[in-house]
Length: 240
Image 1 (cartoon, rainbow, N blue to C red):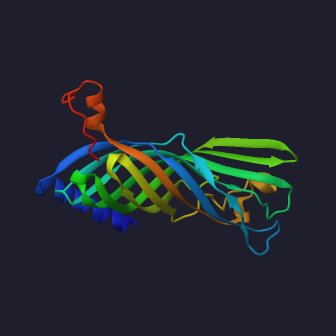
Image 2: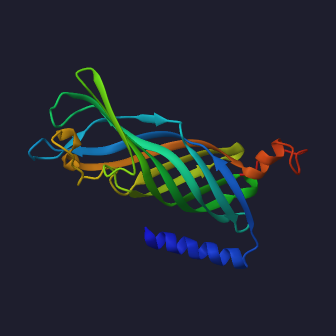
Image 3: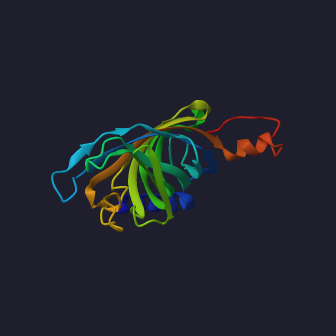
């Protein structure tokens, strides 16, 4: 993963110096449809069991600002920063504590780096790359005997601080973007334990790897400026 980032950054640096290029920024939001591969073990140890989890849909708060570097019409790269709301929901409780549902989520700050191939003048291309995300605000909710319990923490020890991922997607004309992302590490920190409540002992988790499909509309920042009466406002041309 680190080698991929170093390689892409090297390409970015060389291209900036030597290539005939087009550099621009893109603004995007996301609608995320997420799942997770979750395993738990009973109290006192035992065999890990797969735990069913529901589709988790989120549209808030997701926003990204990306810098694109087009090396001609067919090859380019992009990077940037993005804030996302990611997590998972489980219905079963392998610990048999009477928990009806658990929700784990965190806001993240991501730094992606990707290669894209296609026809940029037609606003159509495929892309793929990797990303590191900083998990900076965690919230945990669970329901027991009809009552909801929740806790939230900044830069929590309950999650891994950084989680790497790989992604691939397709950009369509008019801004529609589809992406698949798979996280390479666990969301939760299995070394976390606090107090006597077994729900606060995350060693019960053997795996908490997430993946999701996202749908977004991406807009060239220059075209947004045109809408507000900036230079070239007499013409609107979505250029993604």
